[in-house]
Length: 259
Image (cartoon, rainbow, N blue to C red):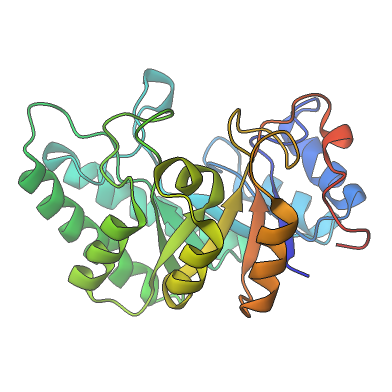
């Protein structure tokens, strides 16, 4: 059975953020992730994790101005200093929360930046972040996000691009964050893709498609997907990163008892 984690930025949103940890534990989750920790003091998050016996699985590097529509700054040539400061901030939180993986959002490439400029900036920034995180035994994940529905213009929108970046950076602690929802939109053939990509996968997230809701609301056969993840020997976390179609508690029929 995969090790399931709950993304608290999307699940249990019926409750204030710091109350979602207890709800995740009560539902049967052992791990949690969320988009960003930076709006909360480290000791608040430490307490929420400890009180509920939860593992902090993952969070993202600072993304720039999220509320203004920015989705990462790693590919932006004029934001390198800000990116590097964000790596330090993420490292500080990761150490405090015992989090062994952080994700780097590549960002949206502006029309004023060429593909080559964005790529070279991305390579340099990922290399910098990987080296900083490696010193503390932390893995840097890179996520491919679909550019057809959710994030047009996102700099990394296929698993192939992520693998090319991993190869060019050539650091032992850089891995692919495989999102079932995004890759169903961009690539399909999920089970075979994950089997081929397994040596590079550091983290898995999921939601059904279309709609990005819970398993059973769309076209993906999650019984087959979860079974395949188990059979292929993946030993990382599998995180529920979906928008419940109703109350979160009513969306968890996919979660095995005791998971």
